[in-house]
Length: 440
Image (cartoon, rainbow, N blue to C red; front, side):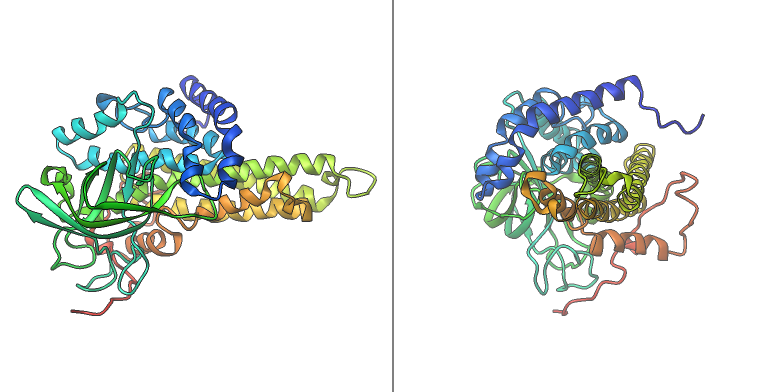
């Protein structure tokens, strides 16, 4: 059959290994991480967990085998990601960002850069090597990444500059919200892929490039951000103050072309965020179902025997299955279209994350006021679910705008995804609906 949702023997092994890791290694520390007020200390509690993830090939499983990675397909990666994120979405994000930082090197880097950066990360045996991805910037006017593709010079957009000076680039500016970038000690990840403006005379999508900033680079400092959800995913501010980076750290194929990197990266991570939302909704659903089967609310039998709990949980279960299938379809599309899926990746991320947030809240309605009791963990699941529509290129902003841009293009075929055909993403599709900032 053309369609078969049965996991292969190898995928079942991946699923079982990820589930065992999540339940036996990750789960025991999740509550402590969530409740630790200091975000850096909380992240440091995960260091032994991360080391185990490295040992079992989970930290760099998405990277190609020829450079030391696990060689997992996107569908394979989603199978593992669901099990990990069902226990803790934040730790899943930490692993995902290793990919966001290094997949572009695989797409756009020279062979030397692939060997120097990807192989270095994927074959490191310390259990500590971690990679960050820095695109997001502080909100402001102009500023902020959500409107990085505003069309005019001086308008909203990426403002971290990289000016060539001999054999180096000099970086200045700030990034805000990127994950993993501060590393385990707040002094920097081993490698950070940073989107910068290499042409200061260009605005919006023009003049953007990506460069690797290595740990220990002078002129780079980090400030941790304390977030309300996914507290095991370490977010930080980066400040570049005349930071000097080797010129050959600029990823060759991204030179004045990193707008495509941003869109391709977030297309790849779309179904991973989607499956994370599925995972946390699954956890909430299973807890609510168990509660409904044991709680009587003072009546003659458990509340599962009444229409409202039964109907609502039935709807939730169907939505979880539907979103999972869509995530698999999206991952398969990306696997079979050279890791491109700018349209379907955005559609999937928006659909799955918003639908699953509603599912978590529906589960809380079944449990009622008891869902606010911290012993049941619904409070954490709701916070975790609320992150998905807002992060990884927010649904209102970058994701929906990408969909809008593709659909508005005269070349758009509304049946292309249905027919599993390639949907190109072009410069003309960027920036639709953005409000230009002031001109210089």
